[in-house]
Amino acid sequence: MLKKFGLIGVALFAVMAFSAMAASSAFAEDIEALCLKTTPIPSGALTYETLAECEKMPAVHKEGTWWLMYDWLVGNVEITEALKVETKGLVTLIHLKGGFLEPETKIHCEGVFDGTIEPGGLGLVTELLEAGGHAVSLTNELSCTSVAGLCEEGTIFVVAENLPWLTSLEQMDIAGEPELDLALLLFSNGGGGGNPAYEILCTAVGSHHESLCEGETSVDLQLDIGPPVELLGIFNAEELELEGLEGLCEEGGSNHNSVALQEGEGATKLVGSSEEVDIS
Image (cartoon, rainbow, N blue to C red; front, top):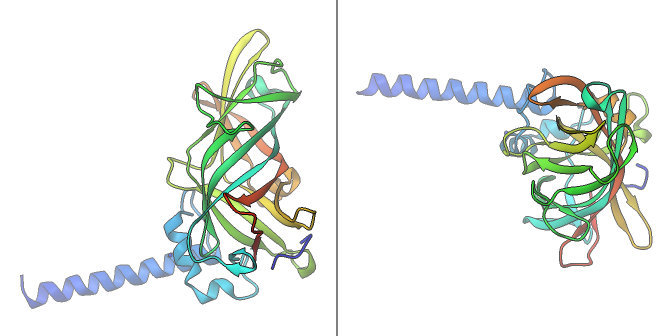
């Protein structure tokens, strides 16, 4: 349980068989390197399929690797099938330098992520809803407020892009301080066309602007003993920088080197059930 604060004949057949074995062996080596993070991970390499392969490898679970997988629990029991969940909370989108977001923009949003948790510590974010429960789209954007920057109040909207997003439970080891190890939920490419992304639309200095920000991100997981008992995901901007998970933004199709970070938190609950969601 989560502690609070805390992959034309015999000769031809032989060649094909050898090639298949070699390819399989290379694939296994590549997957193991990916799972153990012993080599640089190319963008988009973390997918639902590769993380499922990682979960099968005993080496992934050995102490000393950069991360270890957890499992989802419901009622203190590991889940055996996909379950629908929703995460409701507040998030502040932070953008540093570049484009109309210069010098710094902070936008405060409230919404709900719909998705699933699945065996092996995996899951998906499939839809973003506004606080009232309606799906967010280009014709029904998420309304947000300005905390800092040039975006004019009442003109700020956000749309989630590249859904679905893959989620995976991981552990980040803090060197020499195991009591500070972090349980993380990583958001990455779930087959929706790229890494998690959101588009900001607003009026600034009298003109309409759109900025698309994309990149992997993560939240710390903490169990709030309440009442009610809730599994919280907490964005920490300083930690995202430490992990190298800053997103990058582009405006009008060109990258303007704006760094995207997030702050805030949300609580994850089962849909249609009052049972507690936790991790092992």
